[in-house]
Image (cartoon, rainbow, N blue to C red; front, side, top):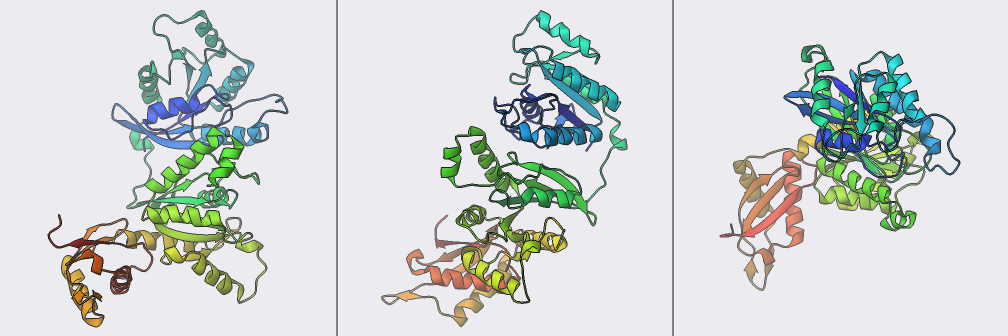
Length: 450
């Protein structure tokens, strides 16, 4: 990556809309409610062939807040998150709002940025009308940050001029290259609210990457953190907790709905889904639904039982807990289980090992010759089923896809290829080729089907 650019400003000036416009996708949640973005969100952007990392931050706001302010309790942590982004950035974009004009909060944020000593570009957002700038635009010269850029993050007006200047201020690419690594495994951490997902991300990253609070639903965006361990690069995605739909509707928050959609989208784009279980609560119906979604998508999965340090235990506790989970997750018996503590770091290394193993199995490709040798052995060992004198005949097997490994078996009649015998063939494939930790998909086709 060739440089880091942070977008900062007070709440509800359009930072997330600008972030989405520059990165070209809806990574950050956009809503008219101030304080929607609470953590800092990373994205990759490219302008005129120059790639850089873009960071969206929660709003920085100083002074006393009304007691009715919905996000008042999060303001100190939002400011801390923004400060981390400022410290790590090569260039900072200060976003203001022409509709509300220059405010005291804008001046406070500008003073903070001037003290940082970093290059700062002033973006006056919501200049949606083309033509000469309104008189209010020129007030922003008072911030002492040089010539403002008139921008409409919704329509894209002015973003090109802004990005041209950003590229000029970034350090040369060769001075800011990350170390070259061979693998970038994408891991989504999913689970119900307050199961310790953000704590795990922060423990892995070695910093407070996501806001951690005892309030369920603190994380609203799907947050990407890139880390390097033992020469390998990983993208860790912290997601909003997935609640029952009825609770979302009762809460009446559209933003909460967007968060759930974004969390499910994170599962869609990840390589491995780590399903977080709260050891103090045990398995819940919601855990089953979350795991079921990842299972339906054919994702490599690891079940991580968090807060294990809080459980009173003896030499039988883990075995008994594991047996119960194996029953609860019987629909995805391939998923390995690891008992961790995001607080102390217990078995985090084991979690990474399992993520790599499950991904390797999920992307395995097996030669057609080997598969058909196995099919011949399996059918000779256990005869295919028959019905009313008609026996199922399996002619041929081939692998059609990976993620998950998908096998197509051609037979004489699909109705005769019973589910139980498909499961038998699946187990034979798992045993023969070491695919015990990944979902497998079997597709039956009658010979002659395309």
